[in-house]
Image 1 (cartoon, one colour):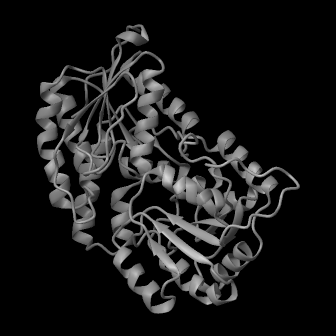
Image 2: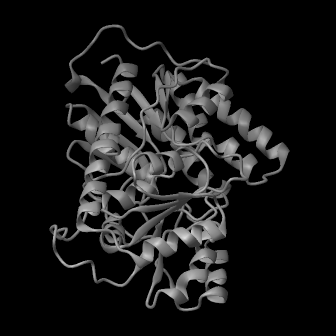
Length: 404
């Protein structure tokens, strides 16, 4: 099944309506939520009407949508950590989504994020309404599942669902060339896959306090390294806990601060309590502004990618959250992130190896970045990894799909 071909007659942007279907949208944290929030703002800046079909945020998080964005929020099941993650939680969103899309005002194009079950629902709804859709691929779920050891039969089914979800799209947006290659392989080259890039919201992730001027005293804040983001098998963040335990006694008062959650959070908490009790802080999911405040004075932000999960093409955006705030990054693992750190002098890049990570952490903790270093990292991120620029490119594709 293919969606109805997009209209050839061009219309003024003000007449264009875009629907975004995703379980994640601001005020929730996470790369997908930030990405779609930025896309919605980029579209409304061009006079486009944006309807977001999403979930009711967790308790305590108050929506504050940009002007021109209308968000329909549906209550869903969440896991113990407040996430919409897992088959039952996905179903609580995907089930009602079909009717929500069929009964609302007809859009000119729909944008959908993973998981592929949501993409499947969107393909069905848009086929019935003869509307095109764009799939925004932050990753390839079947590849990730295979990498972390999900049974082959399950991976095979997931791959078929994902191929169906992507195969009916007018275009599939990819956050990196590595993701694009995986999508092209999965869809057998039948769908255009423009690479729009990835980045962070440099209005949220920015130095919170004024950066010291050249010649000022060296940063006297406690030596801290910060991990902010998902803790899963794909990321392998345990390497930072083990490495930090090796250097903690060499740097008095040094701390490892962790924001976020994930499938390995309990394992990391237990590991920290055993190896370096009292020196690793876990703060759970917090607003981006809280992370930015911690990164502003951190000696380094941390990002990793496990080398043995078949996910080497991934690009952890958490490294940009650090550099946007002026913190260098310690990157452990393979993938394009490692080469970028080296090429642009963003910090330290090493293998996913406890000894190598410990050496990088030691360097980061002992000598804080200078004010000039922090200013350069922030300026580079704004120029090369701003979500605003990424969203503008994505908006171009979405409007092209809408025929606008």
